[in-house]
Length: 478
Ligand SMILES: C[S@@+](CC[C@H](N)C(=O)[O-])C[C@H]1O[C@@H](n2cnc3c(N)ncnc32)[C@H](O)[C@@H]1O
Image (cartoon, helix red, strand yellow):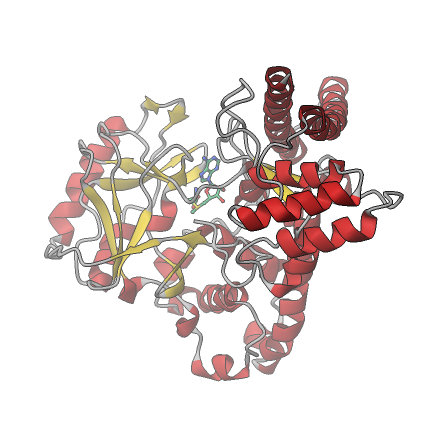
């Protein structure tokens, strides 16, 4: 669900997937008998262990009836709120089958920037991000306390816990992942929040005593809450009460869908669940870097992990100018905004290479093409590539070079770059492991170390797979 709410910088927001008409009739609400049956079912499995998660009862029994009253329809007849080691969670209150609709939350009980009081809305500049606007809604509602129409929801949010999202990491914690591009993204995200706060603070001050004491830290917390629990959809960036109590499993096929025809968001189960099992959905196809930045957690083996590789044309290359012009002409990435354009033609994203044999999908074609261009040593070779591109699909260097030795050389060049990255990542992991052994950190620091370790291990796994693929490709090209 991370919500890439506004720009390429932020991945903040959980994307929900719009789809066309489903014709679900809302059930009518039977709140009193419904809630007592929930309580009964919940207590019977409350102490059980499910998937290594200990299921604890939670004092939110009134939440769902409140939401259903507000919505005027049934939101879920198969889920209960409980607690797991992931915080507040949703559990199956009865057997759930694959394909069952497990929750439906009408747009009218979702919170968007439209919920800003008109007076505040008119003062907030267009420059301020939607995430920040939604954070202001949360802060205002939190300040209103019992007087807020959203109080049952606002008071369920984890305000008190220090999140592990990377904007809360201190310098020495960030040092653990300095080599990764996530370091820079964290700094950018922090600056964006600072800018938004500076734009919004005068508005808080206008409202005097009631809101004037909202601090930068409060604002950061609120932005983090929005960033880790709002979905982007045709309805705008929205907090979806109840749906946002469900935790993430990257392997799940269940996602939040927007049904514009019926003006609601819903989730359909992708598997069977026994009563008492924690129900999980996929927020999005997120790497550990995204999970750390926007959600404050990682998973030990993340199939969506990736590594960014930058290739530069050596300054001393006699063909530097010609190669640069060709690269800028032929290696323009699609769908990039102007801000990224000038930097990204030499940045490549690689994922784990599953086929180790030097065949199959392997490394991205664009990266290998770039290496072929780099390996050219005279103008004729470059001209030949341009002619070949014109005669084929217009893309440069997409075919193996006619000279096998040159083709191998291009790939060996990639291989040596990847070996260097492997060495750097391995050294970083080793120093992290040493600090695990030499010090007995607990709590916050140790959680963040585990996250850094998951991130670095994921990167190393991808680099190793790329290295093996390249070795095999070179061997099989002889
Ligand atoms: C949309 S909320 C889910 C409900 C949340 N657990 C709560 O207490 O309100 C997302 C947050 O839940 C936690 N979370 C979700 N999935 C997780 C997972 N697989 N591992 C660890 N934490 C997870 C993270 O703190 C994340 O920022």
